[in-house]
Image (cartoon, rainbow, N blue to C red):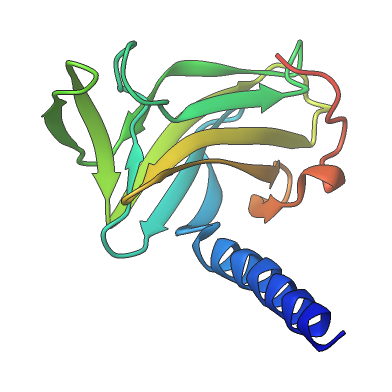
Length: 171
């Protein structure tokens, strides 16, 4: 009986240690977002990331055949808004990866990405965006973050996926 209690205690300790470590490394990037009015129908969305020490996040410009690049999915956009041009990134680092045999482009420390949006429907009051990305240190972790931009009030916030408005329609 005593041996069973010890085994049970060790299993529980291992189980909770695993989740404690996972919780500590599950989000080594902190995001902030903002929206600015550019013209009567265009807005600039800015995503600012701050990575923990020694972590990096792959850029939108990461080529095929390499690690997973940062990707934007604009949710519920059909007929409401559209992107104008390509997103612009702050400074990145590029190095050759001998495993994938491609140049990898990634962010370290603090970085920003901006995207201009044109609102096509004046009744549209929000923009929802999903960011999919891979962050790496000694291991790589795929992540997703969700943002909602309030157009009339020029406010932005990171949100939990389940709280996205109209989240079922993807563009």
